[in-house]
Length: 206
Image (tube, one colour):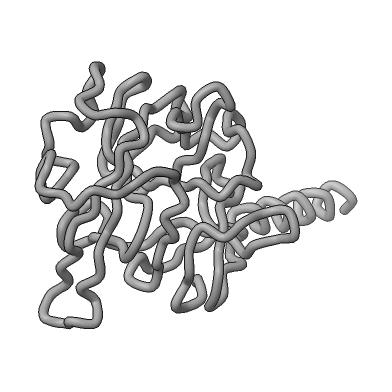
């Protein structure tokens, strides 16, 4: 009887961990670009940075921290045609059990160079910082590439960014920040006294 009770308690706890993470539709997210430096109007490298020659390469084709903005075209709804900002960064050491892919949330890995990022919450420098970047595609450790960092999620421009983003099941309408998820990944949650907002959610997660 005691054994059955213990199994039940363990199962309940396990289910609690599994159920802790949730998602929010990227169409309901607006990101604050807090990466320092000026922004260029982008035709270069391409309107779609993920298709540029300088994306996911082992030799940088742009200066680290370079930012470009492109028109974010969303179907015929003019209210959704907001600009999207991209920043050129380097991948440090990604999570070996949860490799970087499109929509992976990354933050600074090392104080030595804030333009080196990771999606591994165990290797991240500090969740209190307000610099967040979203991967456009899969990336290789040590490679350079473009990351989405500000504005409306450009899901029509970059199909891999379509769909939902991971959260800790706490996101409500309003500001959100980066958090360490139970799934050993970086996602979004509500801001706390020691964290800064990285974006605005137009709807709650589910």
